[in-house]
Image (cartoon, rainbow, N blue to C red; front, side):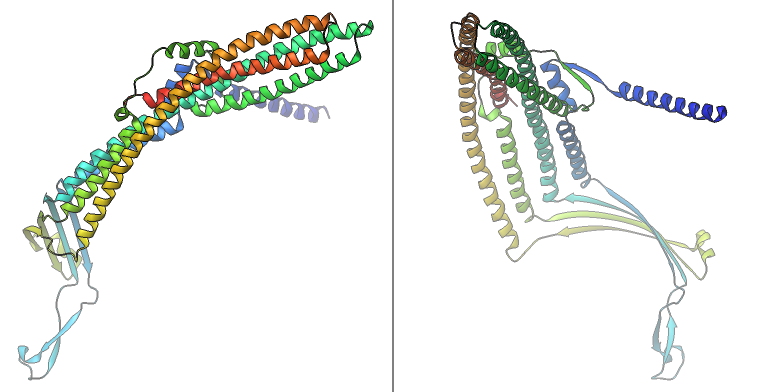
Length: 454
């Protein structure tokens, strides 16, 4: 029995050891990050999932350009053909060719059982208008994805600012709610003691209990929102949800920085906006499509050089004798002159012209839309700055009113309703102030996004 117990105890000890090692391995696999807002932006531009794929689009476009260039370079191919004619195809010829009777035919097999052909060919494009257009298009194609990467980086920057601000907002909300709860708990304790002495009504205690319960519920909700906001920021940063993340900037300092930037109005040049340059690239693409259709009216010229060896025999050993191999070579030119396509080329050319005009119209529309977006973003930022100062002033007044009502309520000079109303006013002013700071940061980011020069 003792041996059996020792056996299972050893197994249990081994299980505990493996479990501890596994837990420790999981803990060591976690990474810890600590970012300021600027550091978070730089990290996201390198590691955000969209940014990574956008960089791969550029790499793919570079390979596309190499592929287009390769079409105009010499094309060299080598081929080896082997054929075993185990039943040789036969034909009939007049028998009199071989001394037979007129009108009769004899079967004749042409060829050998074993055939092999080894050859190499070189093809070179000399002139083709489509190739020239393809080279220009590959450059435009690469430029499009480089600009798309720049646009992605701007969007990621704005997204990180918004996500970072949401986490800071949650942190500040939690801190304020904890402070409010502590204040209400203190007032509730004092009121309960006053009630026990018969110097206040029970309703005042009940009102404070309701207020305390509401604040604790709001605190729990804010904690859950913080977890969601933090995980969203992690995803945008391109880090694992299990990793630790600490933010070194605070809401007030970021707001102050953006308020300083409000003194300098960023200039807006629509032609340097990334969306405008992308639409310009789109116009260039439509223009190249028109050139491509026009190039199909031009002749194309190519050259080819072929060199090879043939060998024939009744058995495979024929191919091992160099004397049985017969060489051949040829040089060729291919000139293709388009003459008439049933008006198909003309129809495609007209379609390309229409597409180009549509792209130009869309470019004009984009220009006007971006100007409107700039005016809207600037107006929104100016409004948020005004709202910030207004909410800051309102918070100061609400704190003063709540403090006075607290004193009056404690001394029995005001009702619980008046004190509760002052508290509600304070809590609303606190949240408005926090949201005003976040709005200043976010609207400034939106304004920078549209005014950033490409």
